[in-house]
Length: 478
Image 1: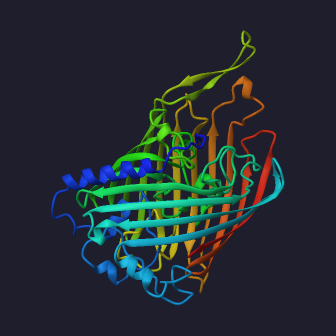
Image 2: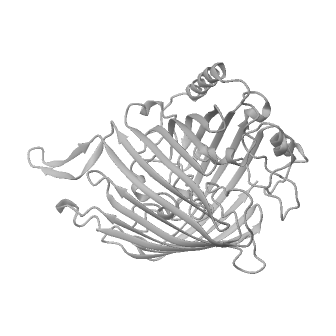
């Protein structure tokens, strides 16, 4: 992922752009669309642009007319409520019922390379995330309008550079992106976008987004709630073309509830710690995906077909690194275009109960008690992508231990075929890399989860030995 240096561009430019788009859409918005969004499919449509402020069963407010997002239910005792701080004396629930949803998450991870890799050491890091969703439709302000806001902080250190892999073994700890990696981030605005639904089937998006919300029931969660290794969260062939946080504009079309088409234009450069305006025109990625869900004998399943095409970029051509005797240094052949393709799939093998609604495959959590399988395959541009092809497979479960209905687990295997090393890279890069990860997630409370994680990796760096990693992470939703 390409990272830009921070700039002094004022945040007011994002707000101004968003306000102009909102005003334009209000003028052209057809009448009578305000009461068609209060459905479970509304959240599915928003999967690319953002996510709800908190998980939980829908409250009575969800039965009100209008509204795009389902309303979380913050009620319950300390053990059963979705947020540790509850409903704030009823005030938080009132705000949610009126369209304002707030969530604050605290992530901590301790992970160590206990054997092999590049360096054997332990590291601790922590992330803070603030989410705010303003359902303007439920508020009665703009029919079909939704504003999503996300601010992130990160402190500490990771062993991502010590495992010998090209991509993170602690994914959530790698973001927001910085150059050099693992710098402290006191505050970064990684999402601020506006979505306008023109009907129950079509929505338009503009603003700053994050891209890691994978539509896979068993392999998502941005590394925070399911697998920690990047290879099981995001296609390895996408890493070169898809920034973590960037400016974007796009459209979502859902012709029927199980089927969703997404097409987004975004800056190729990452703008985790900048506004992204300076990157406009310096490389663009066109993100396209088709998500579908089905039900086989009462057991949900789904698949995603994705295609990325980048243009006006500055990619190093594979095999284009040469020594120029005239200047006495290394020169790079460049390409302006690149592409990547992926196909994901997931399927429940059995569930405790038959679901009455479609599962939310983007929420980073296994929604149903039961066991399922997942797989992915991706192809990269052989002219520019260091990963020729990549695949992963795995098994996940929830409630597999009696009496532990909300505990989750997963085990997976990944393999990446790297581009054959050129003469100048013979000692720098292997021809392939692979690994295994297994985790068990203990639901201490509904708002608090403790995860035990194990990884074995065959590194991409020839000088590194096979690595064994142990990790522990704690998630608290306030």
